[in-house]
Image (cartoon, rainbow, N blue to C red; front, side, top):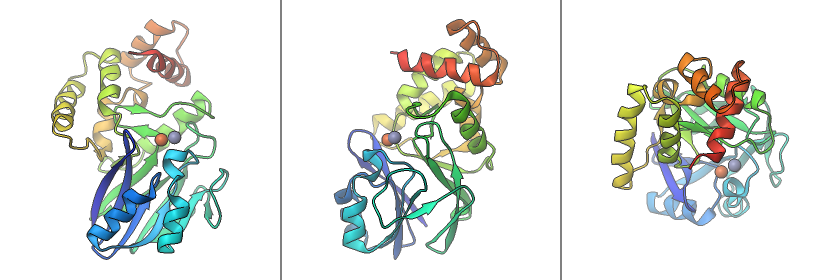
Length: 257
Ligand code: ZN
Ligand code: FE
């Protein structure tokens, strides 16, 4: 199995998974990027997986469906053009001989879903999480509450530690700048920031990221840790419950430059 982040727009990745013959793509905001990759690699597109309704994730769906006949899977409760298989928590997608389980992960949008396969990438667990979890960060809350997003991130963080996390944007360096401000004594975080900067300096993606690492360095997955609570209280002294700590971090990050 090959797992390729196709860059698109400013900082999107359209994830392409293939077995040298058949492929699936996640969140194709742009059709041309995907069609060129399919042609270059001589692949047939079997499935299109959509995590949420934003245009940078869905803009290429119609053209790709038309050009390839691929089946489209998307969230049950968000506007995605028909025909689409509408997926709810626990539903399964079969493609490339793999099985992906759908997880409801509201917060960035109200009906956002993620796709998880326990052996999706050469036997290792694989997660396509759209704009929910980013490396060292998380998505903005456009349609959901902090409590919803925290519950979604908790569910993702509970997946196996060796899960490869495929996020839909290369936001890692910006997220790391904020994470280092929140959690300055975290050695794993500083080590990862060095590695990530080296990768970006040579135009390499920082993704996919192992979930084990995200649990160590991502402040939005660490809202019950003493250091994170303390930092969040520097921004909002009333924050104490995990959802309040999360809300304080998310608001702080929105203002962080
Ligand atoms: Zn989005
Ligand atoms: Fe996006």
